[in-house]
Image (cartoon, rainbow, N blue to C red):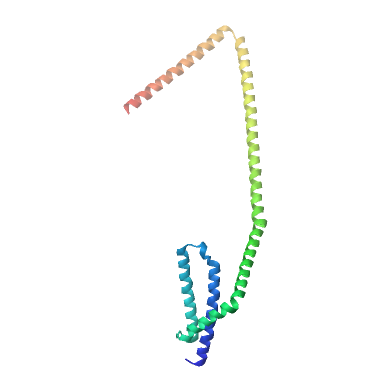
Length: 209
């Protein structure tokens, strides 16, 4: 391994150590361990460490084709220590600033959406619903009123017709009245006999089944 390759490997591993420290703080910030179940924490930890190992190995592979040396672990520790002592406070402040900025932008977009789109549409839907319900109730009331008026007029017409028929019935001669009564009774009797005959046939047909 040439000197330039060793130097590149050292610089790469120091950078990966610092990056690992930043990734670890970011992971701890978003994980919120006390609020998570143990099995979720275990799975997340396993994935985190696996991804970090793959990233470090990939950087090492690019630097010296993946050759392991003792100074590589020393460089990783130096990078991690440099991050902890020099950059951790600044990085955590910047991370929190970015998180709060994203949260503020998301809230602003949400409030803007609710104010400019959701509430007008919801209000319009409510207004249309109220108008349709009012129209429906008005039409129903109008139909009920018209039906009451029609029924009242029909009753009046029937009463008038009944009185007119009674008046003309009283004016008819007694002989004609008796003829009409006989015709009515005869017709009613014939209809009754036809009904009895139909019922008899239907009864016989049912018994045959």
